[in-house]
Image 1: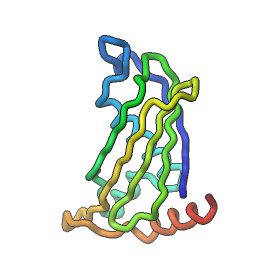
Image 2 (image 1 turned 90 degrees about the vertical axis):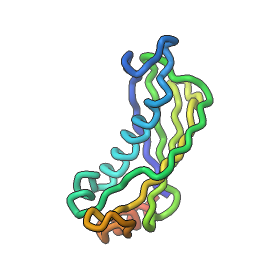
Image 3 (image 1 turned 180 degrees about the horizontal axis):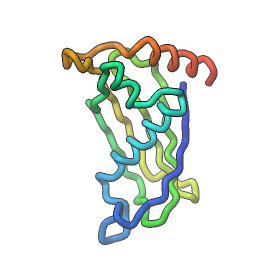
Image 4 (image 1 turned 135 degrees about the vertical axis):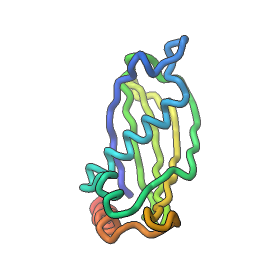
Length: 137
C-alpha cells in the first residue's frame, strides 16, 4: 500500500455563492493529489507520457459528507492499495483543519498506448517504482 498526504488552501474562485467548494473542484483536488503522489515516488505524468503512455480517467466516484469552505486548509490523503495492471486506482479522503472527514473519492485510470489508443501495461520503470514502494510502505 502506498499512502501520501498533501495540503491545499481553498481559494475564493473555487467556491459557490454559499462559500462552499463547488462540487466539480473535487476532481481537480484529486488530480493534484495523485500527480503529487506519483511525483514523490520519483516519476511525473510528463515522463509517463514521454514513454508513450497516457492515463485517462475511466471512473470517478465521489461521496460528499460535509462541505469544504473558502480559506479552509484541506488535507488530501491519497492511497494506492492495489498494484496496477492496465489500470491504476487511487482512493482519496479529504479532511479539514479540524480533522473532519469531508469527502471520499475513488479515481481509476487506464494505461493507454499513445501509438495504438488501446489499453496497455505500465512501463517497466513505473512497475519497478510501484513495487519498491509497496515493499517499503
